[in-house]
Amino acid sequence: MEFFVKSGSPEKQRSACIVAGVFEPRRLSAVAEQLDELSDGYISNLLRRGDLEGKAGQMLLLHQVPNVPSERVLLVGCGKERELDERQYKQIIAKTIKTLNETGSMEAVCFLTELHVKGRDTYWKVRQAVEAAQDSLYTFLQLKTKKDEPRRPLRKMVFNVSTRRELQEGEKAIEHAIAIAKGAKVTRDVANMPPNICNPLYLWEQAQQLGEQYEKITTDVVDEAKMAELGMNSYLTVGRGSENESMMSLIHYNGGEKDAAPIVFVGKGLTFDSGGISIKPGAGMDEMKYDMGGAATVLGLMHTIAALDLPLNVVGVLAGCENMPDGNAYRPGDVLTTMSGQTVEVLNTDAEGRLVLCDALTYVERYQPETVIDIATLTGACIVALGSFATGLMSQHNPLAHELLNASEQSSDRAWRLPLWDEYQELIESPFADIANVGGRAAGTITAGCFLARFTKKYNWAHLDIAGTAWNSGAKKGATGRPVPMLTQFLLNRSGLAHED
Ligand code: BES
Ligand code: MN
Ligand code: ZN
Image 1 (cartoon, rainbow, N blue to C red):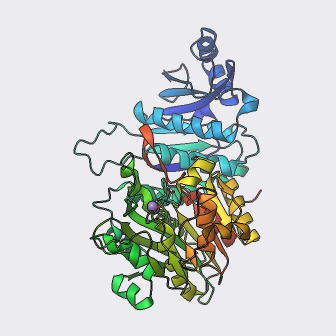
Image 2: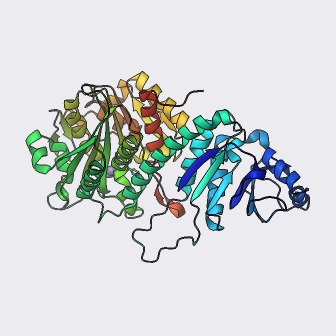
């Protein structure tokens, strides 16, 4: 799909559809007003007759409105004018796009980007509109034999801004949003792929394909033989019950100064997490194909970074592995020696993510990184704490935590911080090894973070628990592409390329 920004008035637009807002109760937005005058009160007449109240999300599609050169006018209910906030704005845009896609308009000029949204500027409105558009049109049809696609899909959207002055920020917003949407689509596609197809080797193939597309990207893989040489016993142990070889894919993006320290992203890549010998209950176990959501995020993010040609050095790590029970699988009670030398007592083989990540986090010390951020569907407890609205953020480095929280706020891809105080470390002490791989029921997300903190002392580090945000369950089951927008924003800020008022 193509996106443009324009600054113009509706009477001159010759498009398949013009999209204009109507507020509750039956109050025309500036553009709807113009269309009404042009058509000698055609629209206000309809409203008076009760066709549209203006409640948020209401849609009314009109054809051949008198004197309007466009074929259709889509009136969109925007709720009470003063109450239009970011959440409502995003919902309205998503619904608009779906309606356009299903009603035969292959292109449209949308004036909703001119509306006032509390606390947000034109850059934000255009960027969210493009992201929401791409988001709501996403489908995963690769594995269906009958593909149910619209006959006349939406192909081109023009977003209108009030003044010519805003065109530049609008264009920047489109560029950023397209790159984010491109990455998020990769994240969703790979995450939605079933675990009989998407295994650690598949992740490595995806990394290689990305490397072939860009000059600035090189890739490498650490396979089981290499892991054994390096002493990555903890990582290796988790994959031992699986027929699929563990593979840690490395994606190097070289966009910065030659000797500039890289920013490293490490993604948990459990292509299936059965729980191992501490096996999970059957209900909903299919969703553990999404336990590679962190790796999928890192892969998508690397696509976005390359598309934006960011002036940074970035390393992406996809920690691919499968957690299965068999005669060779690891057991509760086992004591492992990690790559760092620290020993771990396994109390639950379902707390496998931290065992894979700890070795990956030790491995990346070799890059002498500026910053390391890991992204992981690490704990069910994170869903209990934050639900699906916020990613869990943990860091012992305050400036980094604040940078990430800012980025999440700017991008409307929210995160919320949990503490990693030393007190919590007591919960994962072990009588038989340096650490236990689980604490009790209390503070499960934090104790997982505390575990990782013991392996990240050599650099500035933050941990993102995306157990609640990486995918939706239920009727709308599917990967979300989060937190690609937030992490892209973090990197745009670091590059000095972010939009400022
Ligand atoms: N991948 C899961 C966490 C998870 C569960 C994410 C459900 C999203 C939805 C992780 O490997 C796991 O099983 N964690 C255990 C930890 C426990 C054994 C301490 C959990 O959350 O139950
Ligand atoms: Mn698990
Ligand atoms: Zn897991």
